[in-house]
Length: 383
Image (tube, rainbow, N blue to C red; front, side):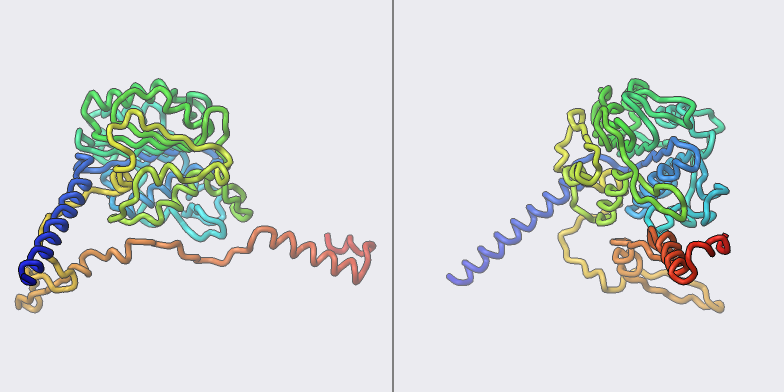
């Protein structure tokens, strides 16, 4: 009798475990996409718009960390802040105070830069209407199984976003471009994020299916800057993107965090503006949409019911020719997939940088000591 009871419990456990595996697999494949793309656009020129370049490069860094390769990222920067003559640290763009994190890095691939960043080129990238001579790196080669992240940052107003301080794209033009993408089967699902003043006005006219949109501010509100740096002389980021990236730093490739968690990023107490989102055009429940469905990359998987020990060596071996002799090299899964190095990458502080107000306080102290010692009549000897 005890043996029958034990076998019943074992069978029940295996049945429930099998159901859990099927549910996890169903969630993994629920989006129906097979590849991921990202179009990241900074539309602002000039040194005082340093933060917009830093915004875009920070998102670029996050999507690359989560698995989207450069070949699937179209990066558009309207100005080259790293090489600007006013940059005290050439070849760098920082997104954190005290110059802790250089988001320009050593492996940034900018596809459109400077005066190439125009409304026309942006719309041509989205719709695929590019000249035949355009290289692959400047094309959005998506299809009807592609999940696309589109991120825009710059200066905007009610129903428009400025490009290069010389032209604008309207919310109607953007909505029509997305409709062309849908009609031409250029996306499966699309996530649109915009960080600009009155950003919610840019998604009001959307009418194409399977689009989810987020904005840093409502109509009539300004989207404010964040992280001022006295050494560089400008603000380093915008508030919404800063807290968005702070949220993404805790996301790893196998994360189960969903879009409802993303909607809670940067409440009004932090952003000052009121972030908004729109999901009525999206067919799936946002709670079932993983963050990595857009910020990560699809990986090839093999479903198995067997237990796999990832610390054991792989049976297959590679042969290398050393001194004319064939030698077999074995690798383990841990060496091939260093997830521990990918998750929670934290910025490293490279150079010491004085805190805000340090120089001003030091000069105040020097003047006080001078007045105490010599009096105000000797002040002329300082200058």
